Length: 158
Image (cartoon, rainbow, N blue to C red):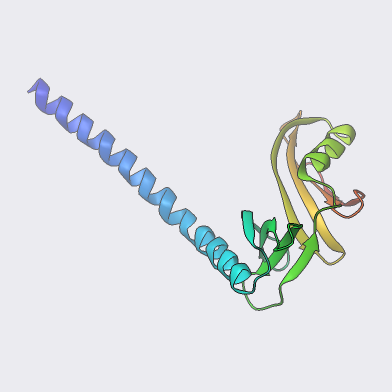
């Protein structure tokens, strides 16, 4: 009898882990598909020779940011809208880096933990979205212009 209980508990534990993995993979699939379509579009249009990373940036219009180097070896960010719209390009060779954006935010705010730093396109140009938690565990966003490092917008204490 004890062996049956052990077997059933082991089987249920395995089943729970398998279901969690399936839910996580299925939930991430739309994001992965959007990123893959954006990478394929960038490569098909010969905008980048090598892709370093891609991620989704959401504002009024959601877009996938694809970062990589072009045929001349210059670092660029390509902003591919998930719906209809034109692709936008921002050169990054002389732009602020993600590390520099986090450092600028850390100088101004009391950062407990950085959550993410993403490059996105806004109406005024390419911006770094730096999300962090402060010492009171409140969520904060600071947007920094990639071109000159000036603050564009703040959303504090969420």
